[in-house]
Image 1 (cartoon, rainbow, N blue to C red):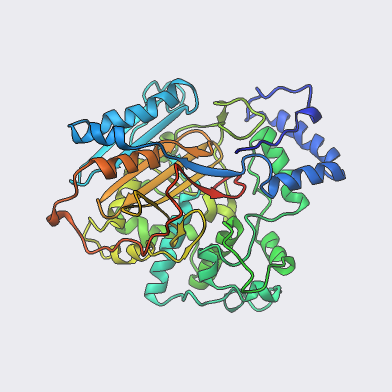
Image 2 (image 1 turned 90 degrees about the horizontal axis):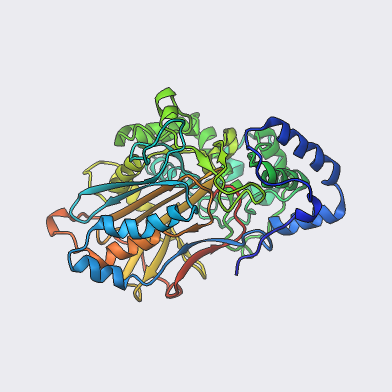
Length: 466
């Protein structure tokens, strides 16, 4: 069941129809919040929301029975027809303003489909495979992939600790200092999803009414103070907790160790070698012209759905968690490399990120990727689902079938209703690749039996990116 956090009783006179670009509105919200944020009832209410018992308690991949689609595909039905069946109803009822969908089929062919409007002034066409979207937590895939490359090069080791990389003059809580890169990339270090303090609560409340970046206050000085004062459970008592602040710390450590910024590392290690020309943390003038306009979706809660929403500048620290931009066509290149179809030296390193590191009650965890199993373990899907600002992004792989699906849309919505559904339908309905199209990549290790239901979800409160 999904629950929602409500402040409407505290804000009876204002309607959620204001433009998110209105600085006057944002300033008024900020003054209102400054007047109430220290009151204990408000702190308690916001704290409850941040801990995941209010607002949306989980993001999810909503999966329906694939067999009708499988029957259609095996009878000669088209990939386009299946994408249309999933996408057009969401556009028609206004749940999604626009989306671009890409498919890599087992025979090596690629397909692009666009729905809705880009939102750019005067543009009356649906988005294409070259339209730019902010891709939220798909950014973490690139952080994990760069880490795997740096480890393979010997520049880093998964056993390296926070204390061994940060400058010695930076004071640290000892348990924080002992965290390893392996724990940070697998979300097993005991760090929370995000800081739980009054500043975060105030930014979160402001976000609900304005859509402004709720991580905007997190800079290097804040991070270092947080690492000094944060307390985590001792080793042996920690569980898997999806942590945005943990990935931000991981990327910062990678930057310190290499002397290169994260944007430079991603460009040098992945994007330039694979010729992914439109994947970047900062857009040039041409890419800015092709940026699809983001829109309000399920969040921010108190703004009307499909109100235009500016993309977020995630800043130097938090950009690792959701600041990347990309296109369907670029992400299909990334998918090809992950499936071993480019005959590129990077492919074995990317394949290492597919290996399962731990199992949770909901799904298995690899390096950046999450892993679901269907049809009693016969179908294995790797995926990443992210949302940030006014955008939603999904990438999924079936390594065995050499199938990939990319879905980029211009609303912040909690549920993926297209990506996992489409990937599962194509995995069951399309013929297996011919042996000559195969590769030497291995599928993730032994599946856990816990994912036989209709919904494959990741528990925990999600706001901003995933």
